[in-house]
Image (cartoon, rainbow, N blue to C red; front, side, top):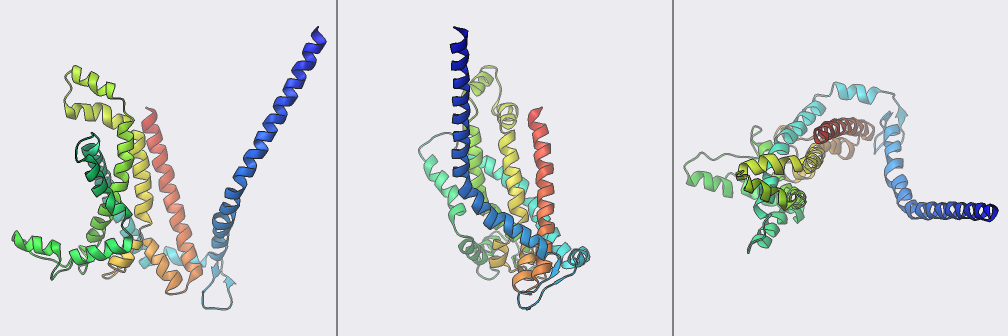
Length: 307
């Protein structure tokens, strides 16, 4: 009786192995189209960009030559590149905390269902779906010194009017205002999803214990939103550092380079000055910076959420 039992177990193991191999093969066939797309449109262009960054390559020149690390050395001494990095980091440093607080506040306001909740959710999310060009054009009119809505309000309350986009000291703040208005609704939805995943029993228990709304927010809401906050901060950082579209339409990098972000500077190098090799080197430096910041943020937030 033992021999048939052993043979049966062996057959079952072989059948399980064949089934497992069949599953793996099927999974690979499903993954293959996406993998091919990544290779053709992501990995191969990245490899070509890495090679081009070591070349003197112009879009209008017929030849390209290998120049080693000259592009990277030139970037180290390029004041315009340093200024664009400074502008990008200033934008990120201001936008990250303000946008995160506004998005969380809006999510808290619309979390509980009410008669007008759907209307407010739609109103807050509309800026996200508005195209960058349209939004920047509207804000350019709002910021106008002569007939803009913002200066009209300042004049009404007796405050001095100013040229928001023509003054180097205020131009970046104008871009920041538009950036926050444009993206806050998206992260509001992310926070809303995180809030809805918090069990309501915790709040009921806290109310029974006599905890106030502020105490509930500090002791329950914030700790259970740590992963959501981590996601929002990391994505906001990446989006802020690679800002370019709003600058292109709103200020075109001016005045005097005060709003010229690093991605906009790379665009100018590549497609206006035709210095593709130099622009690619700048893009790879930016990629390394963003990757480093993202890794540091993920480690910090991971340690924080594991406590």
